[in-house]
Each structure stands twice: as C-alpha cells, then as structure tokens.
Image 1 (cartoon, helix red, strand yellow):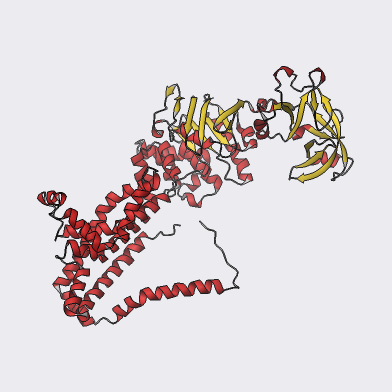
Image 2: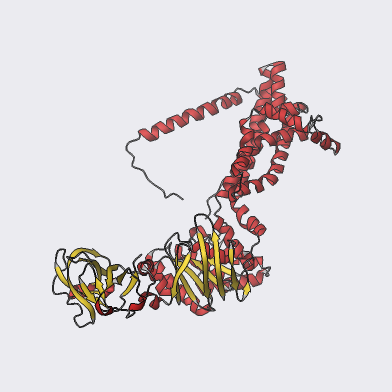
Length: 357
Length: 267
C-alpha cells in the first residue's frame, strides 16, 4: 500500500534521516516516538505537504514522491482536527466531495451515509466551534473517510481528549478500521494507545525509525535503552558477563541466568531491563519461576487509581520499581510502608538485556 | 479564546488608573471633533451642501480613495499572504518597504511620486503617452492616496492571514484542493474581516491625505485641499462648514463599514 524508501528531509528544527517503512493493505501501523522527534514531519511528507530532499514514496505501487497532496488521495486527521471553522459540519464533510465535481444529490447521499456510520447525523448543521472534542474527531474522520482515501494518516488523534473520551474513541478507531478495512498509519507518543491499536509498531527517534515489530515482540527484545524506556520499562540494572554465560548484576550483587540465552550477541556494556510488572513482592506469587530473589528496602510508594508503585532499594545501590495491582496489595500479609525490608522476585518473563547507552 | 473571568472586586486601584488614563486619551481625541460638529451653524452647513464645488470635491475624494483601495486590495492581498506564509531572503526588507510610506513626510512622498510619474521622467512620459496622466488628474490623486495608505491594508491583511491556521490549508490540500482552491475556499473566507477592516483603514487614510496629493494634483481639488484653500483665502468661518460636512460623511460611512467588518456572534 505505502512504501517509503530512504526518505530524508532537513527542516532545520526537525529532520528525517533515511526513513524507510511499509504499511500493508488493511494494516493498522502505529508510529511511536517522543514529542519533537519528527513524527508529524514524516506524516506530512507522506501526505505530500513536505517534499523530501531525497528518497522515494510509493503508494499502491506507483512513485508519488513528486505528486502534490491533492493528487495522493490520503486522508489526514490532525491532533486538533483542523476542521474548517467557517463551515458547518455538513460542509466540512462535503468539502472534498464538492471539489470532485459531484452533483448535489451525490454529495448529500455520501455525507449522510458517512454521518450515519460515525454517529454525527444530529450535528450536521452545527459549526465546529460548538462541538466537543469527541465530536470534532468524528467529523474530521468523516471528512477524510467520505473520500474513500487510499489510506488514513492520523497525527496524535486522541491526545487532545480527556481520558474517558479517549478510551471510547480508540475503540471507535478500531471499529472503523475493522469495518472499512482502510490502511492506517497512526502516530502517537502514547504507549497504551499504541499497544491497543497497532497491528505493527514502528519506533522513531531523532527523525529515524529505530525499531519495528509486533507490539508483543517489541517488548521482548528492545534494541536499546531508549526503546525499552519508550516501551514502558522502568528498571535498568547495570550488569556484566558472569560465570557460565550468566549475568552478574552490579548493585544487587547476584548472578542470574541470561533471560535471552544469547550471550554471543551481548555488547560489552549492557544492563538488565526488567518491566515493573515483572518485579514481585513476596508472598504475592510464591510459586512463580523467578530469575532471582533478593531482599530490598521500600523507599517510596506512589498510588494511582489502579495500581501501587513500590520503589525499592538494595544495600549495594540498585533501585527497582514494582507495580502491584490493588488486589495484590490487599492480599499482602503486611502493610506496605517506607523503610520496610521485603523479599523481591525478578521474573524472567519480559526481562532482557539492552546495550547501556 | 480566553475563558471568561469574574475578577475579585477589591483592589480597584489598577483598573481605576488604567480607566482614567484611557479616558484622558479619548477626551483628547473626541473633544475637538465634538466641538467642531456642535458649533456648526446649520445655515452654513446647508449652503455648503448646496455648494457645487464642495460636494464635487467631497465625492472626488471618496471616489479617488475608493479606487486606490480597490486596486491596492487586488495587489495587496497576494503580498500580505506572502508575508504571512512564506519565509524568504529579504523578507524584513520587503516588510520595511511596505511600512516606509508611514514614516516619511507625505509632502516628500508626493515629490518622490512627481519625480517618477511626472513628465520629466521616462516612466511618467511613457504612461502619459498611453493615456495615463498622473499629474493634475483624478488618477494622480488615487496614486498619491494609494502610496501613503497602502501599509494599513497590507499589514491588516497580513495579520488576518497569520491568524488562519496553516494546517487548515494543508487539510484542504489533502482533501483534493489545489493551492488556488485552498486559498479561495479556506484562507480568504477566514481572513476576509481583517482584510476588509484593513481596506476601510486604507480608504479612510486615503480620504484624509493632504501632503502627497497636494504636490501631485492641486486641481481638481480634494476635500482636504479645498478646506485648506478656503482657510487660507477666506479664514476659519468659510473652511469650517466644509470640514464639518466631510467629517460627518466620513463618520457615517465608517460606522457602517465597521459594523460590516465586526465579527458577530453565531448561534
């Protein structure tokens, strides 16, 4: 469907560095990266708003690198939706159809059908200014989808919404994708959004794609610490090669077997990355298969609405964060409080080593 | 949009000081105009209206300034858009050039215009040969008015275009609009109020122009020149009714146009 080959572009503050990627027919691809990494520049380059310095963009097999945006048939939805404020919702959705030279009847039929599909029939006469965030997003989607685009490009479409609306609308995006089958490239900095929606995940840093894979695979083997942190890992323990190909964890003073069982590829300097959900407090799960068990002191507690974050410190200097659900917390035979010494288990599942950069 | 506030009502000193100073300035502006209008002798006004020379000069002034504004709007919109959207080498120089007529004395501007559009220069001579005579004609009045009042239009229109989110134009392009369609269907409909408001300012500034016009075209006489001539030749008593008439007419027209350009609340 869409293929980028070595796209480079220098815009001063933002640049793209030999970006290559592919979105296959019907695929939902999420491009994940921190703010300011050039995600929007890349999206606008695909849309034809930016002209790359070098590289080629293929859409449905043809080279569209030098074709202006109006010739690419791609639907774009921006973070703030960019609805035309001087037009009603109806006229916003009809904008592209009218440019195509369709008759009034054809335009009306297409607008109303799309409005029904997205549940915005009741607001067709309103101005964008008077709509809620969720309604605006639906209108922006309707305006793009009504033209039956080759694919949808979504630029942080959920970031401007409150949490409840966001959760509802990401389900809506999934439904649209499933029912229309349109290929989607969705850019975001939000990890849970990426995991919820993506068939495939691309990770971007400083204008370049640094890793790609299925969400579940991305977690098992991040290429470097940046990717691991972006994927939500919080625990990094400096390590070195120990006896029998195992890892010696400085700061915890223990040896563990290599969770990846791949000592040949280990760089000279690396650390063990452990997701917070893979750090257990005893006796939460006594029967699990741990890499190791150590005694650590609780040095801080952070509450959220669904989990408790427990910050732990080892006498030899290592610091870890454990995440416990409220159910797990209430099942503990002792209260969680700062200064308490607890036994900690590191799960091999999800743990991996990454180059220490 | 800023969210509405209901400030704490104590500590009124700040608001009071600012209101007081603003009031002082408003008095400075309005008192001379009010005094002039209120002291006008209705009989003298009636005879001014009946005076062919006065009415001709007033209509000539309004017409010449209107032409200057219309032509400059057509030429000035592209320049304003360019200044709002594109970054190019020498942009600040272009912006400075646009503002220049506001800084220089208008009589000096008139002399500069005379040197280019007068018969002594090849351009003026060539234009005269194709029937465009700028000295002592209505065309010359429009030219002088346009030259010194153009910045009001260009700057207002530029600010208007700046206020239109470029993302709207980009979205229009992805929806199939050419750059022209995106400009005429999205950008201009969103910026027309500031553009119109700039046009009104330019027209107003053109009507009041004296210095540049008097150098390029003394005759036919625009209203400001007629007022000046009557003041010089016959004194205040004869200049005043013309001045009052011009002010009243201008107030009426501008109130109407301002009302048109004012953004209104939509349901």
